[in-house]
Image (cartoon, rainbow, N blue to C red; front, top):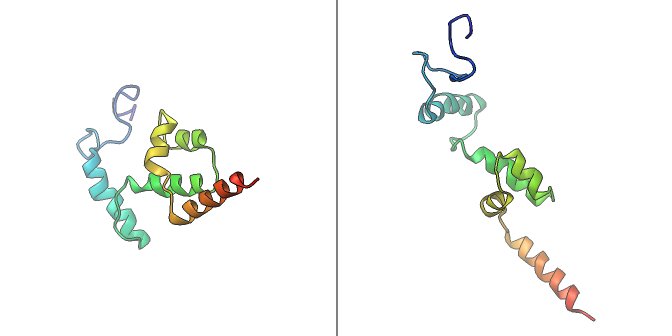
Length: 104
């Protein structure tokens, strides 16, 4: 890039065929779709990668702050609100914990 006279400090790192910025729709439509097809994976939105990482990590007890940092989120509350889903079995576990707390 430097040999081509590109501004490597301020300019884009990945460029399109014309040397301009790669737009998100272009990335998702072209590159992401090709990767999915090559891997034999059903078509899915690019942003689902965050869910694929965050939800299992939180479910297995990973710290919210660590997961938030991995996702590039500034505030852990955002990660908690978006990615921490409570399946029915978690509700059963919560009820059991509270029941045990209330026993004398």
